[in-house]
Length: 168
Image (cartoon, rainbow, N blue to C red):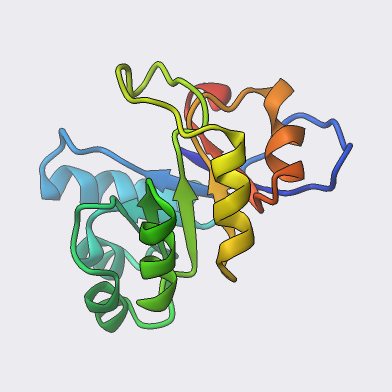
């Protein structure tokens, strides 16, 4: 997953990742550690590890990204210190809770239908705008984001977006 910040309304450039997230739920801890070590050493941008606070610390990753139903944000913050801490959320309440518990950013969605999460009802661009207006931390759009939708995400107040397929 790549997280791409707002490059400015109206700017139409090829998406460029500014953070990479290693998400490999099918791998063992040892395999994730090996992959993270390689990725962290080779990546020109900071690397976050999904859902594994322990491995983020052990591998000296830039931080951790937590799914909504994972370890509590406050508990993760105690373990990773000043490293970057993000959380996926699917509601305004979830975004507010993540902010209050110490998250640096939230990824919110799915904004549109997504091939990676079939059957999940999209929240829509208006819900993204409401969440972006309601919290002080950056909100990143996720779900069905395409190059043609990037400007719409930024106009809704998103600080950027997270995507998988756009970067494959």
